[in-house]
Length: 232
Image (cartoon, rainbow, N blue to C red; front, side, top):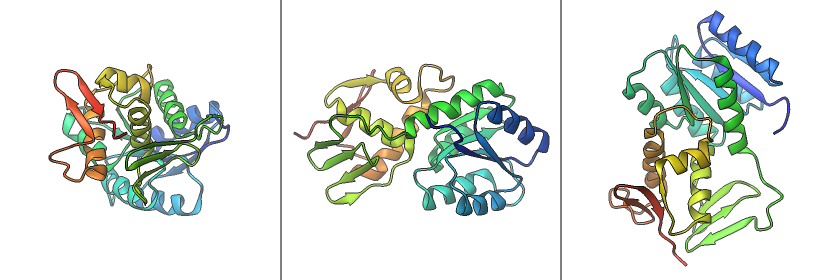
C-alpha cells in the first residue's frame, strides 16, 4: 500500500471531521476536509483523491447526491459512507448509489482506518501477476489497468464491483456464499451486514446483464450465494 494516499472527509460536524483527520494522519494518510457536499465535489475535481469518507446528512446536497455525482464523474474513486442512523434503508440507499462501504455512527476510529486500508487494497493495481488479462467469453478483466470489458465496451465499475468481478472470473463455475465473498473482497476484519454483497451483485447485474431481471452471467445459487457462469 502506498503511503500518503489522499482521503477527503466530507462531514459538516467539525469535531467528528477533526477526529477522523487526526486518526488518518496518524496512520500516514493525507487528510483533506470539506464541510459541505458542494465543497467536497470541488476538491475532488482539483485534487487526486483516493478515498472519500462521506457523511449522509449534509447541508445543501446530501451524501447520497454527492455519492451519485462522484460515481458519474469518478468511477474508480473509493467511497465510504457515514450514517448516524442504523436503519437498513439508509445503508442500502448509499450502496445503491455506488458507495463501497459504510459505517454507522458512533464508530471506532481505528475501525474506520482499517476500512480505509481495506478499500485501498482492493483499489491497488497488481502488476506482479503473471497473467494480467483474463478472458471469459465476451468478458475481459485487465488486472494491470483494473478495467473490465464486455465485448469491446469498457464497463465502468467501482473498486468493489471490480474486485467481485475479478473473483468471479478467476473462479468460473464456483459457488460462493456471502461470507466467502465478504472475506475475499472486504476482508476478514469487515464488520457489517452481508446485504452489502447482495446490493453490489444487483448493481453489477444492472451493468453487465442483457436483462438484469433474468440474470444469465451472475447466477443465484439458492441457499448458498452466487456463481459466475463460465462462457469458455
